[in-house]
Image 1 (cartoon, rainbow, N blue to C red):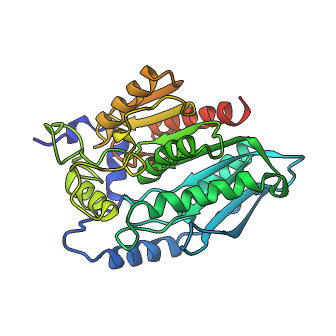
Image 2 (image 1 turned 90 degrees about the vertical axis):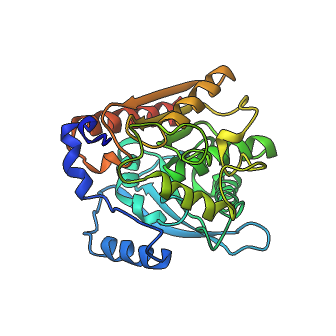
Length: 317
């Protein structure tokens, strides 16, 4: 039974704008090339007062340097808060520049810096490579905060979809290593549980659009290097696997009711609350995965407003 009748009417048109991927029939390199071509034809959006650059930071031991896209306010005075951004793409596609427009808007609105990580993708790089790339970027920003003009006490992490999964895993990794102390974790429909779509009873009204159970199995299999849903999966790969969520930074979690990830995200939010972690949870009715591409829909405007205000509180306390 289709869940199309449950879609917010203002989001229906957005389905034709979002790529319908089928990893079972198309080589992943072809998918990446096609998406890169689409992005290459998009106009460059300049945001006055925001400067964008590239830095290369030391990678994990034995691994290449990590490319990081940096957005900063031009007229920043003193040390500014910083957000480490991690892009989405099911762990297998995407790049940091995908978030340029949104990240520049955040810098303009909040006066903070955004560092967006070009982590290595699966299946070429399996776990823990991607999250270690993100940790390397976080360690560099925190360790060089003075030289970068960053307030080391106000560094947070943000990501959407697989990027939200990496952000959640990074928060766990930083806690357990005694690494940089994160001020917040901002998770937009995070992909955090490899068991979704593999085990348990499937939700009858989620995962029909954009990112489906078969896509989820492909993405997780690529990241883990084995079939998802089995024993022994690291919590730094799939944050929902973590047994102890105490001591993590305050969390903002947002997801739509038709998103494949809604149940894993709501459950994670509940577990964070039970562990004493401050949590703000938003579940948007009639919204599918990636719904925010429909920028004029009222539910998108509400989600963007909620997200920006949560970031404002995160970086300024």
